[in-house]
Image 1 (cartoon, chains in turn red, green):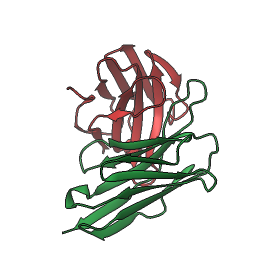
Image 2: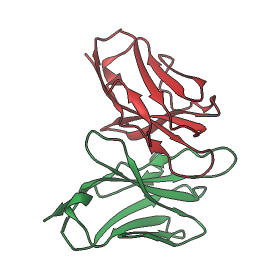
Image 3: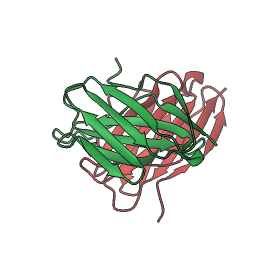
Length: 113
Length: 114
């Protein structure tokens, strides 16, 4: 059973560069979530989609962050331009719509120099 | 403003003993609660959940207790094993409308000593 797949696993780039994180949810799941984990703030929800439609993006920190879900099997989180304070682990998760567990990918560790 | 709080950053127990991890919440609209386990360099893995209509849910060595009046839940692991050493996150959601997003606590690092 393929779980949630994220790429890349690690990304190191210089400040000002564009960063694109990718996620493939579990087949059949219709909700997708992007989280960011930092030491200071823990796991924070950035945005989530139901049936490919963004439902709540109130956690997106600023306009430099954007997320898309062009189809049921793919989503991207883009940061442009990136800043050192964006350094964190970014997780993608998916679930069936409704109360129930979300299944997480192994994350992308992002370092902005 | 933290709506889900795990006040113990770490906990150390002996193998075979009980581990009790605690979680408090402030939002009375939360009605579904979950525990996740996380190993280093991996994503959180779902462990067990409980709906607000219940006060206990059990799955093998893992039991979650919910005290709605105190807005408190706990995870009991009996007996604890060294492989249980991980960070444990408490999470909560409200099922009103289409809002099933999870709010997480900051986690408790459990160390089970052989």
